[in-house]
Length: 311
Length: 318
Image 1 (cartoon, rainbow over the protein chains, first blue to last red):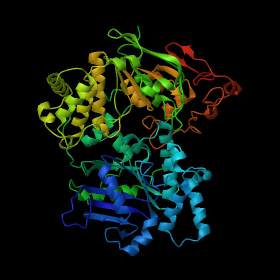
Image 2 (spheres, rainbow over the protein chains, first blue to last red):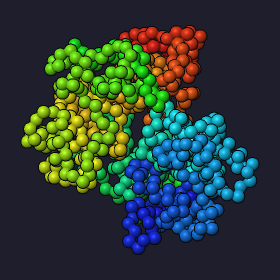
Image 3 (cartoon, one colour):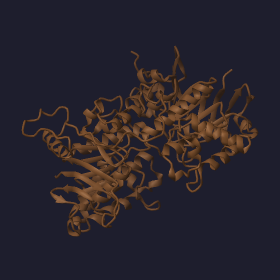
Image 4 (cartoon, chains in turn yellow, orange):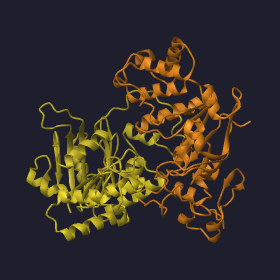
């Protein structure tokens, strides 16, 4: 099992072009096996570019992305053949690539045959079955067409498709969007259970409350920058960046009162990052005093990593 | 005199397993705010079409009646109001910014859309559009009207969409959760809707699966399950002291209320299909406290102060 590290990563479309445009910058995080790291806020360009990066379709414009010691920006085709099945991308029901005519099983077999073509057939069937069970589905449902399933079953079927290769890292791109509250709760619990089995999960969602609920660490994206990063609990209880405060103050609240005052349409708070030390880290030693510049982000990463996964 | 009265309304099941309504009873006072809380398959999604009286809706209603009564219209059915183009009810689209042509200036598009909804001259429509944009906090509305949607911030486009929907000053507004806008901007759109309701005495009917959204926008709430109201009362009561086990499950599933890092409570099974409702209480296959009576009989509404619920074994009672 291996970890994913992003250091001051910049991403944009078509990195091989000379005049490629940076759309995402300053993303630094580290994910160990069995941890959930959430990214929330304005996730849209980041979701697209991270999915492209982690499936080998794009390279970083700056910074470094490392998975299990391999620099993803420099990985060759031979590397990717070994890496691709270990990183799964789960897009929820939104873009579930299932054929409307064939049974859902066809989508699962296609995934495993493409990524692991030389797998022993008996092992392959066992993996498909276990993926369906890990996704919380009755295996018989895989014999039905995707259109005859409920919205929750579709989301779980696309999770099963992501899990057929037994990946070590799962990039979950807003799987809970558009789900009903009870289905949402079940999906969040499913993510937590997967993390308990040792899968590292990067959970991208627009719902900051859901992110804070299940993640160990959390990053907030705004205007293409990561404006805040730290322990999810600390951010939920004591947000420092104005945008994070705004997100928490405008999400629907069971107590009511968050949707009372209309804001003028206009620029949101600036995207200058607030560099945080996690609140419950030991006090810094004299030799590594925190900096106010991006290098401090790196020292933060190591500190949070050292504190280990929370149970 | 209540604004909207729905008595024992039943309708045929819709497409995609959506349950039909099954004896729905509702009352909405003028200027009141009511949230209807129901998940997919609860029959909630068929309600806007039935209320607006679209042509196919008449065929789908099997029994019951909808009455709409205000000082302007007198007693009427929504279909009649729609036919005669009276100031009546408006259903907000899910994506307020989707109706605009990205290539054309937003001002003329607004004038056209407003004139299609209310009878007024082009100059009046333009004045209304500018006034509304100004009231919604858009800086320099004349400048915004000269721009094309692709040159504007989504918040401004959505305000233009809201201005079109509210230009006819409806008496009843039907809203469902919006899609396609981020949390921060969405909250300001909801705030504008809330203020419109407050200033003009517009009644609001909010259709949502989410109790937190209901708590933000409405005082009263009614929870729907399988096409029927199973619990109603103040939204705060529904969240803090739910009596029906389904409402309790909805309230417990909110990530905002769970303790950080703890798994959320789940409910077994899924919502019943509209075609095959179970006998007795429709919730009994998923209910932890169901006993023999629940399998046989549909519980009647029990009143407890301002709170009503349909359950033989309510939560929080020894």
